[in-house]
Length: 353
Image 1 (cartoon, one colour):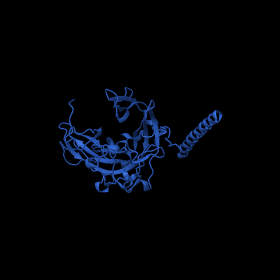
Image 2 (tube, one colour):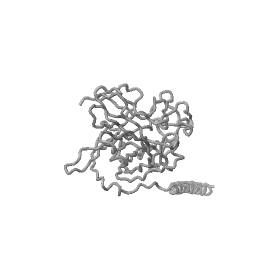
Image 3 (cartoon, one colour):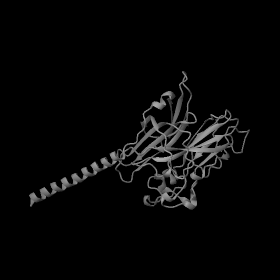
Image 4 (cartoon, one colour):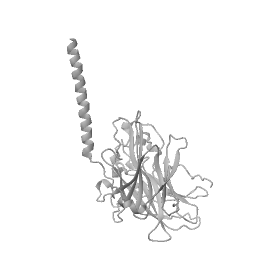
């Protein structure tokens, strides 16, 4: 009933929380990679796809972290190990993003979910998702392609009373591809991104993944946000720990089934299990974040028919050729319009002469 403050708070940018039923009051939180806000120009940022990289400061950068917090005191009891492939290396920093490794600023670990382990009644499994691709795994989403990101798996061993020793052990990681940008925008200088915003595990292999596509432009159609919830079934044999880069990896991402989509103000910033309905139907709670709303945060409850999830429509990325054809048609139309305008102007000029 009484809020706790995470101590120390320096170096943390908290994004999600999950709790396993344990004797202590501890809980797990994820902090995404971040830095102080230092204004730079878009053309000198490390990656042209990420909005926040225009304010990136390498001197104050903190890589993503996964920490267990004492619910009574707010102190950090434990920091889970993040594999070497997910850790930002200062010595590898380069203005060319293709020469960097590790997580992107403001695009690091963003979602966590904990559920009972299938192998032991006393253990739990924790999964953690990255918002977008690690530097070595490729770019952030664009109109042409999505972003190959990773989902980390941990085994949580039972805690002793006020246990301050390690309880989380990293075990494996899987590939997940966020979707490409779907909202057509021809405004130069607009901000447009899509990323993984939430995770909810049904079991070891069945996951619900929340993605948020956000467009911030100009004029009446200046701001649009589309939230989507996907169902994915992980193949246990398709781990990607052996892949130094997902750009050169023999593992493909699992298929995605779209089970919910809504365009509205605010990001779907978290998902969790809700209280079952009177008839036993499970529910999920959506947390929406809207910086322009005076309240800022809202929670909505949805019922979930788990048996129908595998039969939801497959999410198919639009063909790149469609985008190119649309671009060419638009360019041709503009060109014809300019030529027509010049002919009309020339006609009136000739008549006047």
